[in-house]
Length: 347
Image (tube, rainbow, N blue to C red; front, side, top):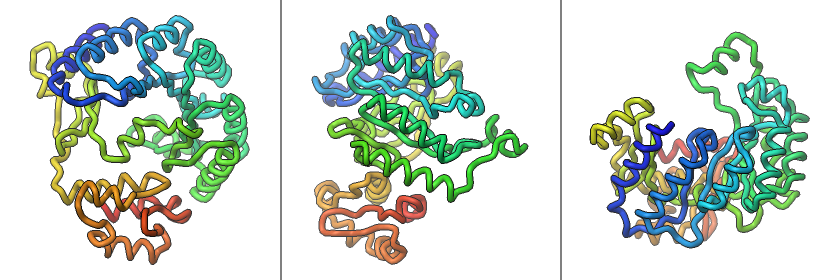
């Protein structure tokens, strides 16, 4: 861990020539940073603060798995400026948690959550999942009720994606894990949406719900095509019309940095043309419930999206997947269920 953190700090220092930019969001995630000894989080934050101008109102998030937090860790996180905690609960059903390989129980999550509140973390996100193997509608309803009763500021609700060459894929193929039918998964989504909205959570992005004023700035920046720099193994960046990512090998990452070969860790995934940027702006914007702001598109690209994408939009309106008014282009309720079909038009 120490070797990795030292390499990470060196990479952060290497990019410190971007001081003309003000940092509005810092997101420590991509796994479980709360596994690290808290002193390493302090060291990382110290380097960032020394080298980058950070907004006084910056959102500083740290992802944490329940069961990995302690009073000492949480106190230090707060001290170094972490003002938002994202907790990967996934479900309140311990049997389901065990089936998907999670190492925590609901009781451990609740203990960690209440501890974070006691220490003064005033902005907490809780991750929940739907479409888990053997999950029922009742399971999800019970999870939602328990989580909402704790009044977190933000709730993320993701559908399970079975990745290739994983233990979960093998279990599904062997019939040891039965995934819910698509119809049931969509029913879960809509009942969850209705329940969360009834309890004061605004549905602002396809998978995210927040109390007023607590919409994740990190999410909003990404969906608004703002630039960001990623540090560390497998980190992704978007800067100067390029999308690039770091190697996903810890050993390779550390070795390259120790040898001074920073660029060897990086692969450029895409160099965007102006046309690419316009399409991506549409794709990202249509993740937001309010949709693409037509005037903001015009301000950025000096063109009207209603004209540029008239054929794609006409097709999607005809299929009742989007609706268009004078100000916004956004998904319909049907479009929320078939969002992938909408996004495909702008790939």
